[in-house]
Image 1 (cartoon, one colour):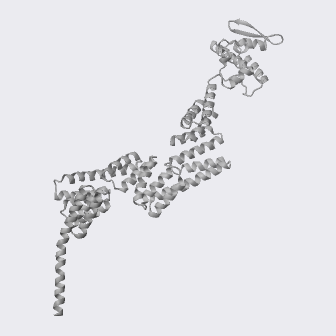
Image 2 (tube, one colour; image 1 turned 90 degrees about the vertical axis):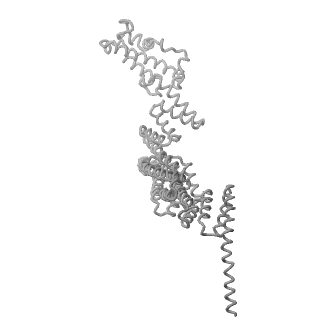
Image 3 (cartoon, helix red, strand yellow; image 1 turned 45 degrees about the horizontal axis):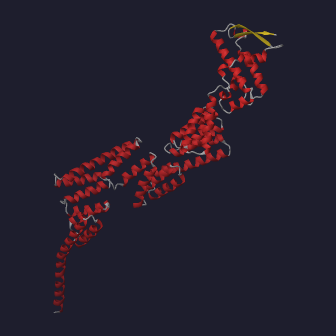
Length: 497
């Protein structure tokens, strides 16, 4: 009797379990309907919760997984959605929507080949399915963009790679690989804030993503924040010790930092030859690092200016501004070299560029000085005409005039009597210029105005009406000196008195 009672008890206990299974299905359907209602209202979090309850009540129902996959996709959680979609087609391989959702998840995550297989399976089950047909085309388009991007990256056509990745990301918005490639190319194009933004978004979702850490470091490296860049490269290598790009970038960053610092040290110590060699070696490390190389060119230009190799200094500064057209220091250095080589128009152009960018009193004065020197350079150089230094004394100016006036006077029989009309005309011109030069430089007031770049016409001196013979007579006419007589219009010959 006791044994029979125990058996009855056992048999009685199985009845509620069978009833619970049917009840569970009904309850699961209720949860599903509630999930559908929230999904229709776009409350995807609540929809997710109710689909999860339905799955918990009935874990063998493919449609529940399919519905939850659709909800996760709307929440942007494609990797989780992929797991649910795959489970749905494992439970029911004829579930077309399950294959579509699996393919969509693969495509969103950037696995276009796997997506194609899922869409092909959906088409096998329903060859007229318009969504499957379109998604299959989309997956093939993504594969084509990948192929083109790979080729263009090798060609260093980074703009085209960015274009391809933008197109691919329209179909694969959750693909980190595409985003990283785009970010890397943006960094190579100098679009650092955009590249940083992409990498930071990925790191917010996955702080251990070595590729994103590498791109963050790359941006800092190209912005000449080398020390911080090294920290990111080292962190990337901790996450992925075989990350080749991070390894190369880290090595280059450390080498650049060391060479640049050694060059700076040599320069400060006055060892310009060594500084030149170190900056040159640094420039050979990484041609892609535009900002650092611009600074290195400018530094080497400064060294060349110290060595008085001004043409080389100008060339280095020109290379610097080619790399970075906002580099004020390079423009200033080049402008000073232009001033030192009397290339005043070029100096004015550089100082104008600087002043437009940074309107400081110092830059304004530099521009005014260059403009003044340019103005002065367009006038006759009276010091050069007389062959004297700008600091020549009054006596030196007189002696220079005597020498040059005698040399170019058109009445000199020994020099010009047999010369052609063209040569005689040129000598007359030079004779007049010598007289002009003496007239200006022998008058302290006029000399001061001339040296300061002021207009001499304001003094009431019209050089067009100037007669050089009056000065010549004052120097050489009279007893014991030269006298000269006219031998024809505008010409003279000398006689000793």
